[in-house]
Image (cartoon, rainbow, N blue to C red):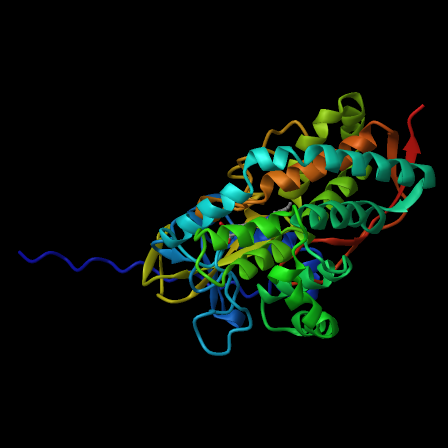
Length: 404
Ligand code: HEM
């Protein structure tokens, strides 16, 4: 008796929504619910891509590099094919074992011992900034707090000689490039055009300031830790990944604290609780909303068959509110203890290498506020910036009411 032919798994259902429409960028949560509740994996025709938004599938696709490679790029366009609108990164866009060696060399430069030494500098800057903003009372929590702080301390430790205002334009361009080639990307390319030369000079050896970790990356290349000629691209990865994300995370956390006074009261009573607040801020409004992988051939995923060589969008922002994983997922609970569980900083071999830095920045600035401010009161509606794959505030009007 011959065996019955194996039943072919179905293709993922089509989800007829555009994750990158202006409305869905400003408010992605209706799309996230549809993505999670339609199926474990869906097909989005407009971009000829698959998408996952449930916690388990996002974790699988981001970790299982044999089946879902980063080598086609972490953006929507395949960097190996003609017409790509992104240039490859030598850290984020290589799989193990090549990635393991590069990551090991970078981890030496950015070890926990190195980062701990920055605490004093971050803390002094945070205390001074907090004094200034609390004295003013009514401030824009994005421009005057999150941006002012991160744009001071991060370039200081990176040790890069580049005008600080350029960092925002570069970050927007990067996070637009991860998504589709649309109006948002065109606008940000136009903004970067006049500073392109300065930007490209910004990650060259001669722009590294003494004592920064940028300089150490070049020294590691000289010592043979990186392939010759790649140190500049490593520095560029930090310029592109380390600024906007942290600003966004601090901005979202401030916004949530302003709208949840009971949670802020806990931070005032014990300023170390700002750490839990930041984890909730980036879980609920994940700065990096989506990162891509490419199927390395036909792949089975949660009962569906995916075609080979197709992009898969991992919507970390959706996974971080998956009720299958988190109780009461939409609530802001600074005691939730979700660090290391939520996927805002990625997962698997490419998990964020700057996470300790981001956490240290957030702890210093939010802690400095908790020691001075009784209440954070919203004085207007927050505004979001239109960037394809970055969830970030552009404006957050708040009043800081001083502690007695
Ligand atoms: C709240 C702030 C941050 C968020 C939300 C964030 C998010 C992420 C995510 C989701 C990934 C994984 C990418 C993937 O798997 O394809 C990642 C990787 C990375 N992040 Fe962050 N990041 C933050 C802060 C930083 C900072 C401060 C730095 C710089 C020091 C940084 C540098 C990097 C680099 C270089 C990688 C690539 C690591 C690798 O491929 O092995 N990030 N980040």
